[in-house]
Length: 61
Image (tube, rainbow, N blue to C red; front, side):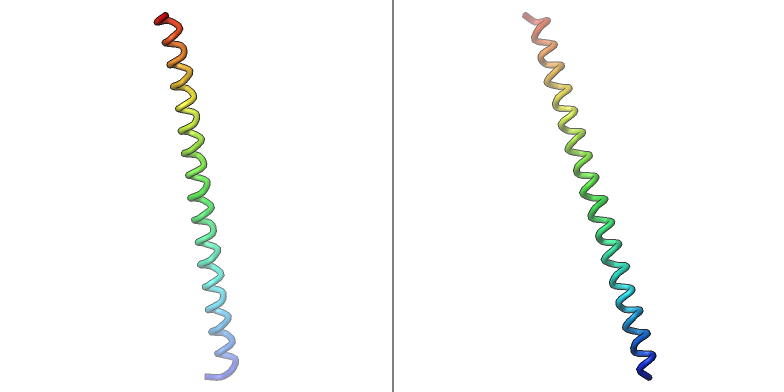
């Protein structure tokens, strides 16, 4: 195996590592965004429920 082949192999290896890291970063960002949306939905739902509870209390009184 010549030096040129060694450099090509190393270049492929580094390119593969870079692709993996990029893929992992995209996956992690997507996961974070999903968790953020879930939290926002939960807060919104909680807020609506509290408003409904206050509304119901006004009519119960």
